[in-house]
Image (cartoon, rainbow, N blue to C red):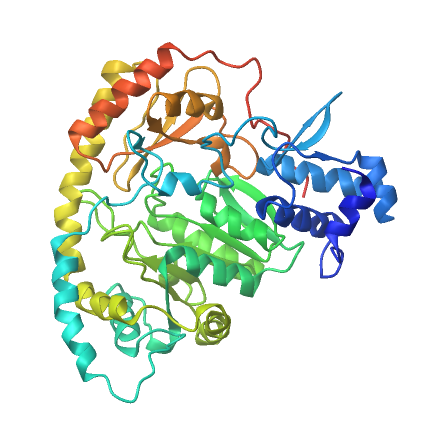
Length: 468
């Protein structure tokens, strides 16, 4: 593409707050994600684009490097810079972040070990809807738009936090369409282009996407970090961490909350997996137990069913009001019948947790046993809860092997897409929620794929971490 042609598509890319490189990367990212720059498109050389935009070459180089770390473009000496993918070939299935939409839709013959969520609604959910639907007949003088969520559900969520030792009023609760929308709203409300955001490496890829979408500069820290640097916010998963399954002990939790408060960094505690401990595991306190200003995200999608799009944010009332304004613009409010069902479900959530914990632990043990039997060189440490194993390959690259696995009928998530620093290349994330029969067949296919796998000479996705 000629530089001036790209300049026209970029439009008013430099309007906004933040470094020019961040703004340029954000606009290029949007053009790629929206299909305006299709796979295989050649981008202008650094100097040519810099001259066309009347900016320094460093601005373009930094923007390109950021997109390369995200996997959106490929830069190779001698062949230039291209949008990731190949124009001449038909679109192929890919398991690399940032876009993993295909991993959410079942395909005939493909076992999905990538997206971790219950694969069927429990009987309690059906019963909750049966109890909730008749109450629709009692609604009067209510048009059904509740940007903050149904009052009854906000009260029920507040009750749950109070039972965990965290004083919470309903005006500190915003109901969302799942935890992902909660993250999107928070990123929109709290991040300006160029703001630094602290994230664990690895972490939940959906969070990385929304932060990048707002032009954040991501600073990676080890899983379980407690020392906090200057930043707009810090995002952590301290309980049954996604993807490693780690649990942050009580004392480091307190230290993290106190350090964030002292540094003036807004802390976001993603508790979407908190209710997924194995039998006998106690649920740790949320970080808000040590600082009421911590923002907490919760969801019913993991413990109940992904199709129940009900989540929430617990935050200071002023933050909730701000998020509700954004929610009103986005979709006016959530699904009322689903929220009524959630009101019925919350009092019975502990019973659902106890029953599903047994099945999840059995799936965890079965998957590890099958991996040890058929792929003994793979490292798959045990976890105490959650839904996934963080598996290290003895050779090669998770991204290239994921393509081989997909051709053998198994979809897995390579680690590089979960690491904002471009690391974790040797890892895969596998969930253990399927039946023993499905897990055994999945490992059999993975073993067949591994026997036919040729490791690349370079790790795919192992790109330099940007200096921030």
